[in-house]
Length: 99
Image (tube, rainbow, N blue to C red; front, side, top):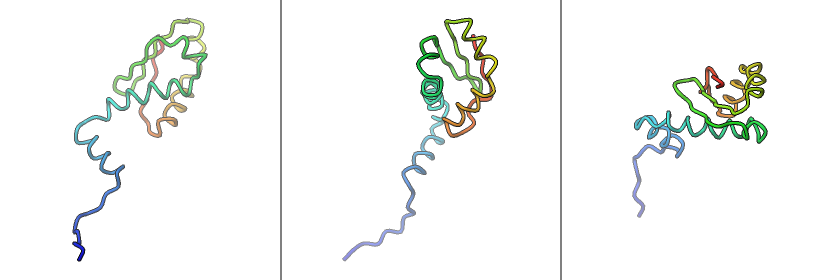
């Protein structure tokens, strides 16, 4: 004899999403995800000159040790934002400040 369960089934993804929202963890996860996305998208050439990455609200702050690289990246800020958000699969970044 089998017992019939009258519980609503949820996917693991739905349960995790609910847990993350209930515990307000998304901001912390975004900070980790943004660091990984930067490393993946920008590659080792840029990563060698990246000294710090910080996400605050929807602004990504990136500290670079090369002023020449900083100037080059300034020209492509909008494209970088688009590529990073595509890598993250959601619109996390609205602005980038290079310092």
